[in-house]
Image (cartoon, rainbow, N blue to C red):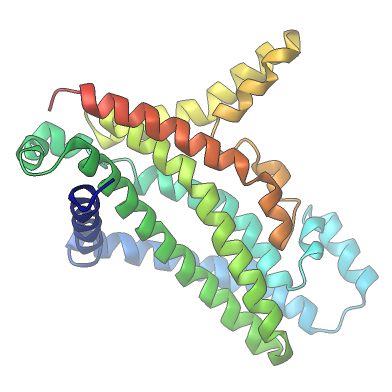
Length: 273
């Protein structure tokens, strides 16, 4: 691809960032996110930090976290990141469905997309919005990971190098987790008329499709492979892994992303704008 593709993509990505950080709606969204994250950091994550800061022996800590169903976080060298990992695997995909639901549908209904398509290609519009939404989510991930990093270092300064290693593993893996969800929303946004419709369809795909495939595969085990088409189906297994072990499942979100982007691009090229 040449600069005629990448330059518009970068400009559209930049516009998405401006829309978040310089509009009232975007700032209200950031404020709401900050409040929710504050309470998550203050209670479950800080609780884990305080618990391990009390010099509990290994068996006591292990028994407690096994009892509350979070025994897998003991696989992490820093417990704060273990708790964060479990929350992030649920919080960010749900957040993605909201933040990525209006990539192109509203602009298409207003006629803005038709105006933009006179100046840039549909590919640039589609991928520019996708990249823009991903950049926004990466910034939110980085912001939350940094707060957990500070909390861990405040508890024990000797954890500095380990903390950076865990933080890097989490950031890379959360980006991989969010890619197929964002790509799915890009495809849905290109095919429906409103962000609300895109959100509803995403929930249907995420929940009911997984159930239907599980039901069918119980009778026809060969069809169990279709689960790979459901974004996030690997997350229960992913939550049991720690740090760089999580990259064992990296091929699943990458494959899902390619499939959804190909579908979304095809819809975008054929859709009337």
